[in-house]
Length: 269
Image (cartoon, rainbow, N blue to C red; front, side, top):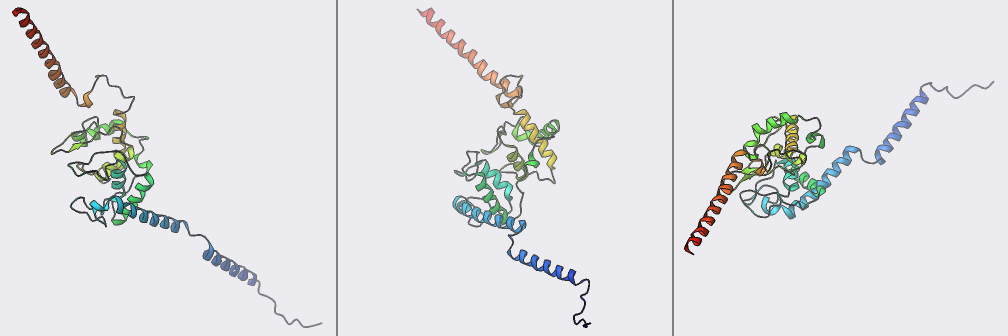
């Protein structure tokens, strides 16, 4: 009987070989596999910033400076955040047609994808309010009555109690909120555009913003009844009474003058 020259393998040898094989396979996968989700997101963000910078150079740099630092024709954009860009550009206020006391809302000239790219570039200049998600500004489950109370306490002084807008000082005004999207109303409260004060979450929580949006949409909705008839922009009984005095009494005076003039002519003849 021949003597066995080969040594018996250890029972764990097969396990070690298997682990080494798996490690080698994992290393190859890590080397040749596609980029991870985080890397892909980072790449997409970098591309958005790059494209946004191109759009900024063409449409914004002449007023706000090549690096967003601001000039005599436009304020600095460092730290305004993506929410401010989405609001200003999304409502057509920017780029502005001409300087003035207040930049009015007009037709938007950018697509939403371009706005997102511009917002990504401006956000890269400094931290600021972030563009809200649909969940943040959705009015689902909002308290309309509470929103009315908040609106009257914080907003009605300028926008009047139905959000129809009103005059301010030196050519400025509070714009009408009729037809403004939920997202843009939320962003306006976040960022405080032009003459409006900002209401960050530390001052006005997200839930209260949603309640206010729900109230604005309720009082300006197509199905909202107006039992008072022609509301003159919802300004109330004072303006409507003044309207009646000016035009109603004015019409009566005009009729009286006309009758008197024709009566005098009849007597002369």
